[in-house]
Image (cartoon, rainbow, N blue to C red):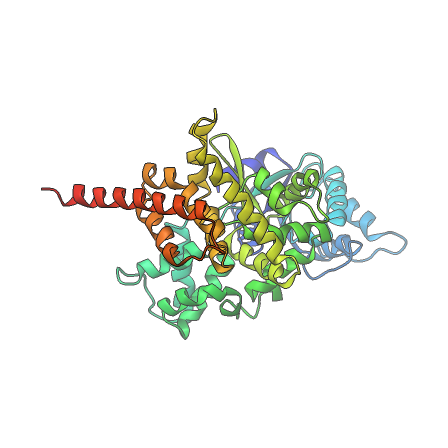
Length: 438
């Protein structure tokens, strides 16, 4: 909160950005109340969500300020004349669907009223010169998210408290919902008719579970799906295509993976970075810098929505196959210890473990035992050097190698898998003996 107040003290246009339901409006209203006394003429809150045409944006601001129409003068002119010399904090909420109109309006307001500040909320920046974009993070899973869940749960069921018995379930709900306030509030409302365990189990189909928000909220904040629908509707067709293709990634991905898996077929490889950047700007993809490398990810709620869109398309199997092939190729590099970059390959593979698991599962589900065994064997260095011995054994155990027909698996792949399975099993037995030794 202090960081945001400092930003507002040094910038006359601050835009709170973030995914739908992350709490942009709540934060804007809260911080506006905290700094209201710094503006001689007070605070004006304007919600742009109900309007659909950019020409109505100045009218909506004028009405919020109580300005009447003036014959022979445009609403914009009336508005700008009124603001001259005033010191106002203008909160413009929900600008994303009127991006160009909002940007023009804000630019004019800032010129006309040098003493005023605009605090906007949008799922992407407005793109106005001098704008400070401030990304609204998800709630802290350790404190804020649990506190919000408990607060909203008490409204649904008087006397609800977070105890030692249910704390684990509450934390699991908040974690699986990525600390997203709207989703947490909708989940908490279910305690009226469901146990916490049932809510956890129901999150596999969260768009059916998380409905029934406050009747006073705008419609898209009453249902989780409607909130993501709103963001999806604002995408171009190319952005929608990339968005749904990115759903195949689990645990994040880098640019090369996105270009290889999601590029091609109407999205050229060189276009992926630009389109991916637009999805980051629109708060549907998160970019995170770790150890000097950028990884991208979709919040799980957003990824499930994108996965639905991918399943509805005619390219789902092709994209999943590309994903499998890409990570199978990555794993195969571990078979070449002489590479100059070999030392970086193991930590990279561990970072992408969720994607490797997904590639393995996809191979099994499609009865591609050759791919599945090849992948399990390629990761043998990972199994015993990174503490994944039990998982390695489980991968080999998932395939009955002795029963795999020669038509399904080549003799070379089967022999290699048997040898690698023996090695991993030996490491497992050694680990057990070491733990049981007095």
